[in-house]
Every structure is written in C-alpha cells, then in structure tokens.
Image (cartoon, rainbow, N blue to C red; front, side):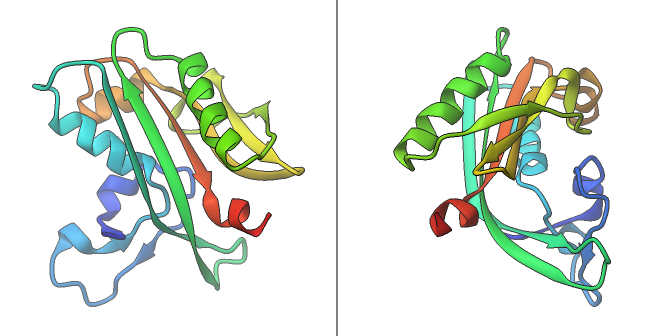
Length: 164
C-alpha cells in the first residue's frame, strides 16, 4: 500500500514525488512521501461515522534526496485525531505515550509545515535529529479534503528509532 497518486500528495511537505513511469492506474501512479495525506483521505471518506475519529498507519514512505537523484525508503508511523476539540496538545500526549514505549526523549521545535496551522506545528527532535512533524491541520487543508471537523496529526520516522 505504498502507491497512491500525485493528487493525493500535492499538499505533502516534500514537493518532490517519486512517480511510477508505466502505471496501470492513475490511482497508483506515485509512491507516497508521507502518511498524513492518506489519513486525511480516510477522514474525508468517514464523515458519516461518529466522532471522535482517531486513526493511525504504519508503513513505508519514499523521500527524494536534496539533490533529487536518489530515493530512500523509510518506515513511518502517523496518527490523526478528528473531533470538535482536536488540538496540538492532544497529539503531543499521544506522541509522548508512543515515544515513552521506545524510551525516547524528544523535544518539539516550532516549525512551519504545509499541512499545519501557522504557530501550531513543530518538528519532532530526538538526539538533535528531526524525525517527524506534529501539528493541528490547517483549515485550508481540511477544506481541500472535505474534512469538516478540526484535526491534529503527527508523523514519525520509525527507522531512526529502531537504530537508537
């Protein structure tokens, strides 16, 4: 389930997308570079379900190198929560619980990110390395996906945690 389409990834933080050259279906024409867009897709298709909705996914993502000539795969965990009071603090509590299981101390540095509201997003830092993102999904991104409730999300590179 690492294939998706370029349209799904257009709001992804990394503008470089690995595209499949001879795809059979446009639905599966790109390799995902983040799990958050697929969580937003799930939330958009489950508006009829009761809230709160709390979902997660673990899987492979592909990142294009800074020079643009290499692709690296990594494993990530992403989680999202959607309900009338979803916020940064709630997501940070989930993140703290998950990282406590890994015995990993972390800090969050304020950061801007295309998925998240300005001033309500951050980079997850472990051992001075940026291993993920956390924040409240911006109203513009929610509107793009047709999600009608506030939402917060986080994504962590688990390969880094496994090496620690």
